[in-house]
Length: 328
Image (tube, rainbow, N blue to C red):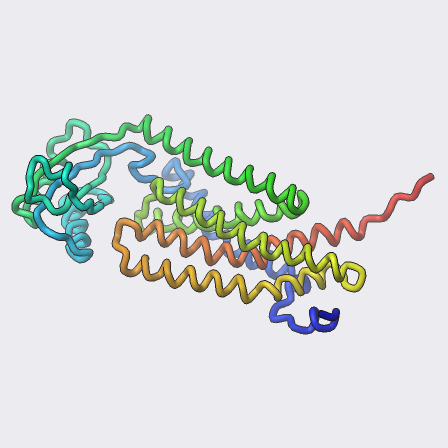
């Protein structure tokens, strides 16, 4: 491929409008950052955390019916009307071990709510709601998770996140160089901050809580985003081998991004189609997890193209413009 061929087919110009892309990125981040600050000031936590981290109680009821998504939504609505705040409901298919007390049990309704301790009134409210819809329901277990365990889980979640990011820094530094690694990690920070910012706003305006699945979604998004970024960086490195004496670094960045643009978009769109199907038809219990994935993949694709490569371009241009020190 000649130099003219590689520079003639540009759908987007990354280098020419690099400061425009950075400004758009800052504007997109701003509402979420304000939401995180507001949550930290007024709620003592940037995000509205669920009982996985604050502690809570899990009640499990055995029922002799199959439960549809519509019935699940109705049950959640009835619990909220009874005064149960943000109940998390999960349906567990009964197995042989769970059927020891009642052989007619087909499913188990697992309800997670705030820590109720010795509060029999809250437990009775939940039981009454379940009994109205499921006549032969049976309370099988009540398990409480204390705030201490929740705090430990919170620390372990962020430890896992820190280890994952450190491993990526080491890998990218070895494979490329530190400036590339730094740009990629800033891109991951951008993706994480954006997703957290959206959920901070959802927590303020819609009462959405984050749990351990949210951390899982963040780690998955990080993996997807870094993969997309590495593909672009690999193409930049390959083009530098062949065109570094014929083209400027900015031209090589432009060419590399446009060469990988179709691949990035196709991969993201195909993944989003699956996630949208899960979001629409996968049930309420995984909806927030899937939403975090959808937001993260969209913003991860953006950051790989319009943020990470822009940072690399700016830094490399500065290095190339530095005067060479001559020997005395």
